[in-house]
Length: 165
Image (cartoon, rainbow, N blue to C red):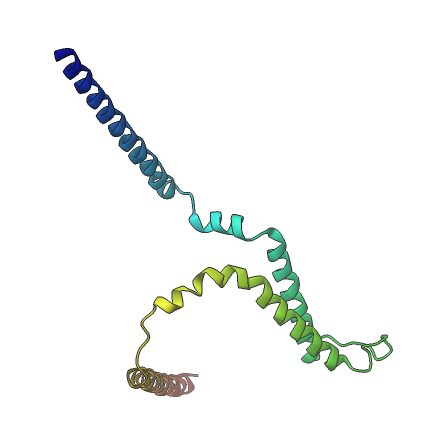
C-alpha cells in the first residue's frame, strides 16, 4: 500500500513539474516576443513587408508622376503640340483624363495601407454637434485674432524699416 502511495506521489509530482515546465516555456516565449518588439524590430516595417508588395509602391509612384504630368499640362507649363496625334487638338481633355486616372490609381494603391485603420474609426467617440460647432468657432476666432495680430506687427515693421531706409 505504501508503494502505491509513493507511485501516486511521484506521478503527481511529475505532472506538477511538467505543468510548471509548460508554464515556464510559455512565459519564456512571451518574454522573447516582447524583447523582439523592443530590440529595434519595427512592427510597422514588418506589416508593410507582409501586407504590401513593392508593386503597390511602384504603382503609387507611377500614379503620382502621371498626376503631376496632368497638372503640368493643365497649368500650361507643359505644352502639347497641336500636330501630336490624338491629344494635340484637346490637351486639356487629355490632362483631365490623366488626373482622374492617376487620382484613382493613388486611391487604389493606398487603400490596402489604410484599410486596417478603418475599423478603428468605429471605436472613436465623436463630439456631439453643438460641442463640435463651438470648438470650430473658437478655432476660427483664434485664427482671425492671430492673423490680425501678425498683420499689425507686419505694418509696424514696414513703417520702421521705411523710416530707417
